[in-house]
Image (cartoon, rainbow, N blue to C red; front, side, top):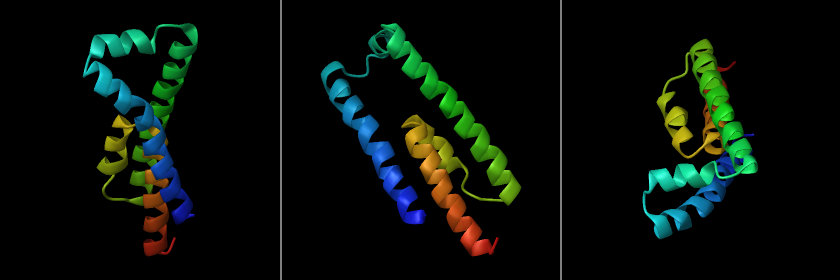
Length: 105
């Protein structure tokens, strides 16, 4: 499973950034424009609401599960929420698999 989680980390980084980097190159760090375009229609607002809620769920899961298992370096997957839940969740699951393998659980 660790290999699958690593592949999902790559996809979860490459796919979102493949859309954001060209926009950033063209527009610069124009936060008002980013927010305006992200909420410009119902489907865009729907998608961003889904990403936001998913990010909150991933953050809660990472915090609760890492405390339950006494995992270290929980800051790493939490900081990856800046890219998105598509990176943070598979990274946490990879780290969790490694932790469980080392601890013998």
